[in-house]
Length: 375
Image 1 (cartoon, rainbow, N blue to C red):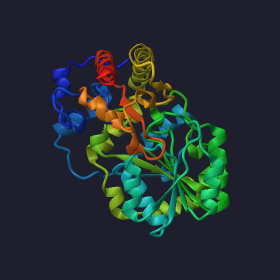
Image 2: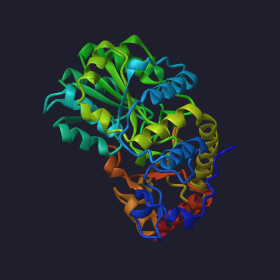
Image 3: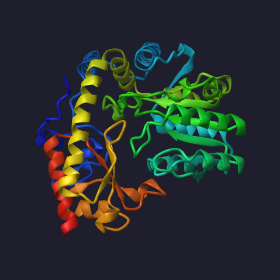
């Protein structure tokens, strides 16, 4: 059974997360990647038990979390992960930052594939790395462009898989080709796979070949699929000799940055949360199926390709005549989306919408967006 997207608006507005505190009460907040659902029962039970025993200190033994993830990866993706392949960190941003700090010198280039989740550029700036943009071509990797960028000296590739904001799941052939390019040029692939559990069909980067395992480190988390972002727990997976050595050089503080409640919640999610996740995917599919007809009825000029993973819709609003940042007009009409230009090259005229909400809220949001066009 799908976790219901039927929580009343007043209950949602009582939340103190970023989604519900950033905008005034009259605005429908659909930018931040949080879902309007109750916690999965196994996760809620694990957190209640921790509070009841006043267990809120530093994270200690994470072996049960690692075991839970290994089981999930084997069942879900037929991915055999060794106990020594997994390291914890606070979140994917911290993991990416520390990997790049350890692997690169200031001024080294990192290939990005925009339009891309905006914080990534900030992560690069933190370590003095330089973004090298190789935009997607009709949603697919521009492998020729990646090859040229690496030949010109870029030292790493940031792979967003599934891709944020387009929701595309990169094909096995693309992943294998990317691995071969990374090996040829001696580059590191940092695979952000945080949305992987939200894909009905997903192939982790490290599973596609021995070359991928030799060139990449994968980062994942329960945070997006089970709505746990505020609890701070993510995983780095390295299965090749070079990547494992790199992860082994990360600062001690990287591991200690994980939150105990985050680790306990993630353990419960990976071990016991699959039935809830399957229901969630059904509920998200229904919302995404609803969004297409809503846009066709109220905003037929908007381009919408149903995402293959997740709940983020990348809307092409260029035909609406609202300029490079249509999200500004939508916000004036009472709907908050993420501005497309924030995603870098290819983002102008677009906006990102979070569809993990009550269907009625989705209907009202599209009606307000249509009113913005008419204003």
